[in-house]
Amino acid sequence: MDHTAHRPAPPRPGPPGSASPSPAQPGYDRGGLRPGIVHIGVGNFHRAHMAAYLDDLFALGEDHDWAIIGAGVRPADATMRAALKAQDWLSTVIELDPAGKRARRVGAMIDFVEVDPSNAPLIAALRRPDIRIVSLTVTEGGYFIDPATGRFDPTAPEIVADAAQPDRPATAFGAIVAALRARRDAGIAPFTLLSCDNLPGNGDAARAATVGLAQLSDPALADWIAAHLACPNGMVDRIAPATGPRERAMAAAFGLADDPVPVTCEPFRQWVLEDRFPSGRPALEKVGVTFTDHVHAFETRKIRMLNGGHAIIAYPGAIKGIEHVHEAMADPTIAAFLDRVATDEILPIMPVAPGHDLPGYQRLIGDRFANPEIADTVRRVCFDGSNRQPKFIIPSIRDNIARGVMPTGLILASALWCRYCYGIDERGRPIEPNDPDWETLTATARAARDAPARWIEMRAIYGDLAEDRGFAAAFDAALRRVWDDGVDAAMAHAIAR
Image 1: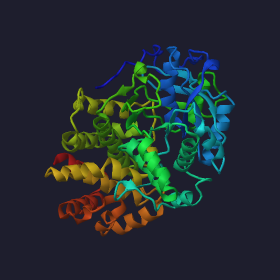
Image 2 (image 1 turned 90 degrees about the vertical axis):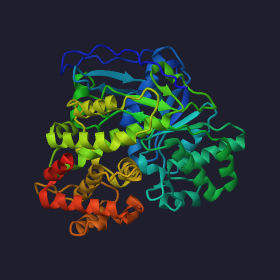
Image 3 (image 1 turned 135 degrees about the vertical axis):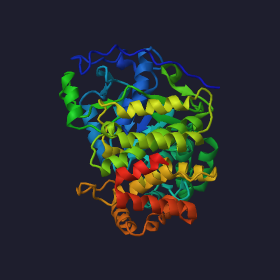
Image 4 (image 1 turned 120 degrees about the vertical axis):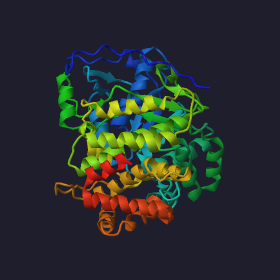
C-alpha cells in the first residue's frame, strides 16, 4: 500500500526575480531537538532534500528526536563542517521558482561529526544507541559497483584497504561496518541504513557494500549484518546545482552575505521509500514522502527518464558549447531529440505502477529542465559518465533490444558521450577533464573516431553489448555520423526516423 501526504503549502512567492530580505527561519525550538540520524555526505542535495523534509516535519511539532548529525569521510567534508558550524549548523536553501525566489533556513541538523582520516569520531557517533538511522549521499561511485556486473566489487582498492585495516577505515562503508561490529558486541540493535543516492536499488547496493566489505575481514559479522540490517530502497529527486558566486550572491540578496555554502534548488521535490525501518522512523509521510511497495517503478521512471534525459541533452549541449541545461532545452534540435527518444524508446519500457501518468511525467521533466532560474550547468550533468551511462542509458538500450527494437536514439546518446570524451567541442575548444577515468576515456574516444568499435569494447561500461551485431552496427553508424555530419545533423537524422 502507498502512504503519501501532501507537503504543506509554501509561502507565496514574490514577483518574478524578487528576493525577500528575511528568509524563513525554522518554525520550532531547535534547542529541543535530539539526534536520531547520522547522515554521511552533507552536500547540496542532502540539505535541499532530506534535511528540508525533516525541517518541515519538525515545524509541525512532530518527531523532534529525529534531528540530524552530519558526517563525512572526505577532506571536502571538513570544509563543509567548518562553514556550517559557523552558522550553528543552519543551511540556507533558496527555491528557484520562476515566479519568484524564496529562501529558508533549514535547522534539522544540530551537529556535525569531526572529520578524521581514521573515521574514529564517525564510528563513535554511529555506535550511539539513539542513532536509529544512518543515511548517506556518497554518489554512485561510492558504492563500489562493478559496472560490467552491476554487483559490489570486492577488488576495488579502497575496499581492499579497508578490509586490511577494519579499525581504521577510510570509506563510509568501512565506518558503517566498524560501527555495526561495535553495536553487535554491545548488544545494541543495528540502525537502519538508508541510501539517499541516485542509483537503481540504492538500498540493495548499500546492503551489498556493507555485507560484502564485512565478509572480507569478519565473515561472522557479515552473517550478522545480513540477518539484521535493514536497507530500504528509495527514490530521491530534486535538482540542486553546485554552489558558486551566483548562488552566494543570491544568499546575499536575502541578507545572508556571510553564508559561503548556500543551496539553490528547484521547487519540485520527491522522495519515495520502502517502509522498512525496524528501529523506527520519523513520520515523513506527513510532509509528502511516499511510502510504497512500488519503489522500483518510481525509481526506474526517474532514473531512465530524468537522469537519462539529462544525459540525452547534456552531451550534445556540451559538444555545441552550451553552458546551461535550460539553454540546451532552448535549442530546438536538442529538445526535439529528447522528446523523440523519451517518447519512442523510454516510455514504452517503463514499468506500470499505480497512479503513474508517464506522458505527464515526461512533460514535467521538460519543464524542470527548462527552468532558467536553476542555471544548472551542462558540465555538472555530464560528470562521471563512466558511472552514469551504465545506470541511466545502457539499461534502456538493453531493454529495447530485448523487446526487438534497436533504439537508435539512445545509441546516438551514448555515441555523443563518446564524442564528448574526445575532449574538444565543435568550436575547437578543449573540454576539461570531467570523469574520474577521463584520461582512459579520452584515449579510447580518439581511437574510436576511426574505429567506433573501440568504444563499445569497454566491457566495464557496455558489458557484452559489443557482441550484439545489430547494436555494434548502429553504434558505428551513429558515431560516424556525428563525426562526418556534426551533432545537429546526427540528432536531426535520429528525430526523422
